[in-house]
Image (cartoon, rainbow, N blue to C red; front, top):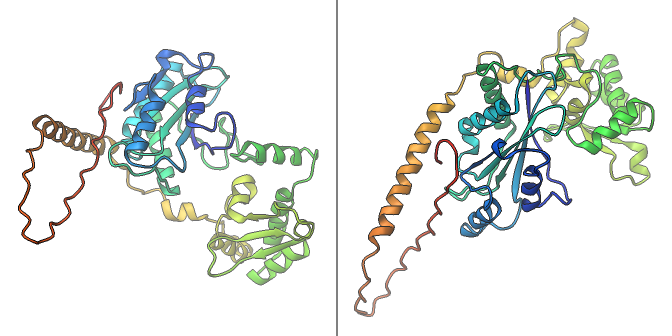
Length: 361
């Protein structure tokens, strides 16, 4: 069973591009046979990624992206098989095509996990990497398909842990927030996130309208921002705000991610549906279930990859042929008093990438 997530980039020793590359390639964490480069030579990975940024003039902003694919400790999988899952995922994932990427399988913990570190700039067209929630969901679905085809378990559904048990404890992707929530559950320290979650649960049970819900939240010390022109519902801890605390506000969808009790209330529509229909015994249906359903279309990623790869190889061959032939010498044009139009400036040639085991970008 594999779980895929994007790691937030924080300031620290591994926050730089060179730092994260050195981290995932540490000999005590992985082996040479468990490292694969896609569109990049591993020893020159940093220089090649920086070269791409210079060519397209995109040296500023986010430098890289980091994905982690973790397998459950009880999954019957070897490091080589986990690495093969990672390779198949990169080759089939259209969203990653054209980005210089390093895949490293770490075996230093009880659970085997893959690290994917890739350039923020695409070396084919020069665009920066961007991803939506829908695209991330598609990547996770693709990963599940690969795992199932290879005989491994898919990722657990929302609300369940990696062992298939229903999740009852709060969790957060951010390590710092996760530790705070754990301490709050153990009564080691207070947390306004936990207090807000409990207030929302109590208000949903008692309220029969949007207005009554807002009033009940206020009575429990939370100001509710529920506006038509705002996408998300937000709650503010009134007392913390008065004391000047910076962390006093949280959105509903974030609470739903942290606390399994609120997993069905991620949007305004979800919450209103739960308030109005709970007295009729109607089960809450969240937005993701309404949008995705069970009949979503399965995308043929492999076919699209082959088409994309063939087109890129053809364009590369044309550029190489033009470079070998060379441009004809320019002859000065007579100046008849007319202003000559500016000649279009050609874009710099994209460097050829080596060291990609498998298909070529």
